[in-house]
Image (tube, rainbow, N blue to C red; front, side, top):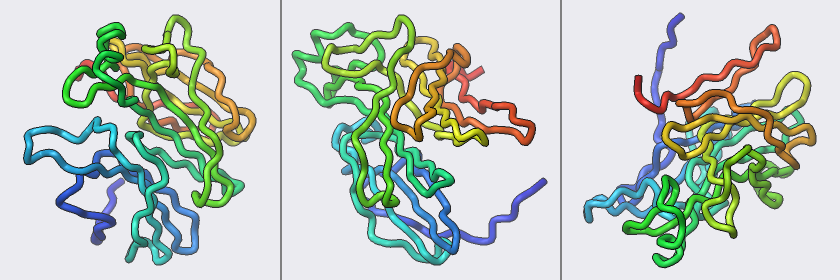
Amino acid sequence: MSVEVEGFHTIYKNADHYCGPGPSVVVEGNGRVTVAFRKVKSWLNEGHSGHWHPGTELCLTRSVDYGQSWSDPQVFLGGYQCPCLTLLRDGKLIHSTHKTELVRTDVADSCAQVRGVHTGLWPGVHSGTAIWRSEDFGATWGEPVHLSGVPDLEPLHSNLAIPVATRGNVIEMKSGRLLISAYDLTDPNSAYLFCSDDQGRSWPYQSRIAEGFNETFLYETDSGDLAAFMRNWGGD
């Protein structure tokens, strides 16, 4: 099976901003497409990457003509990283992402010096993965719910949630159950499964999917099996 690309359209481009990786797309139908992406002021001229910059903004832009043209991007969340959108069957939007909390240098220095604690140019501490719901297609969002409950995984600071990151999808199963995978920051990473039976209002921990893997895309087969497409931690 092959796919032929007939063309492409630039959604957003600004030489002063770093905008990737990780845009997320949902298709509503009737030509309506919504894209979430991140952008942050570029510091490449100063020799610094903006990939984990705490000033990152998450933006929404929309098309009503199958992607031929796009609205001006609107910032809907600040300080977070990889936006992940899911459109539920009832029209609600679910958004998941993770964050490194900007802190003073002395706060970062007081934490265990492990992955997820940054003491360099922009000192920060990983504050976990949060999930939001919107009932008006992204015009407003409810309060975030942070993933928790992974055995033997503790927050990097007492003010923060456990350090798990996500870059994948929330999947709505045929049963209506929602599933998401998130991964820890240890060496090697482990990927975990969380579920929601109340349309995204709560997300109890379910299980460890695998050790040595992180970013995960979940897929339900026609027979009802759950498949996980995973990024390898070690590169093998």
